[in-house]
Image 1 (spheres, rainbow, N blue to C red):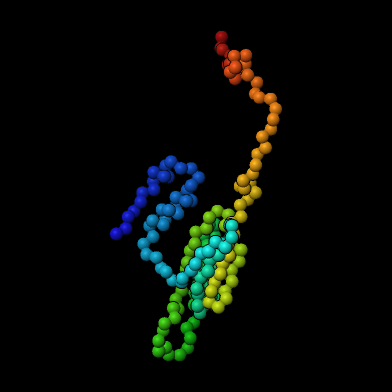
Image 2: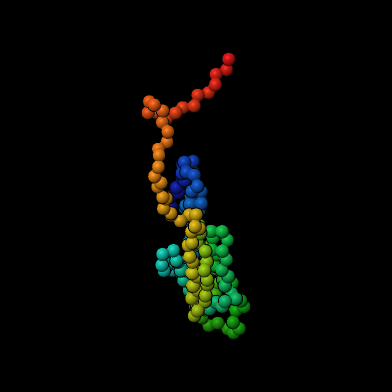
Length: 160
């Protein structure tokens, strides 16, 4: 049995989290998960990640790695089948497409294929304006106050 969650109250009361809420909404609607090809996601260092995917029998020309905005797509399209009569077909020879949602500021650093293992390196790099920074507190005089100890109030002119 599958439960469905209603995220509409979160949409009404949050600002700037649309991407996260859309991802939650999309994830809750996914029916069946195709587990092929097998993959691992590893955090290799602070802000560095690696996707390792088993793609036996695929060549570099048969694999495509594409990044669009916050979506990484890995797809494989097999070329012609081997000539000859197959007595047993145990090696998976089908086309696939695997999608990964990427957080903001995560970029693909590189991809390599060695011995049937596709490795995709990712790095999160925040812009300088988004990084935490220390704000110096300046000394000096306080804001001017009236004689009564309250902040000064500007009064509007009255119409005659």
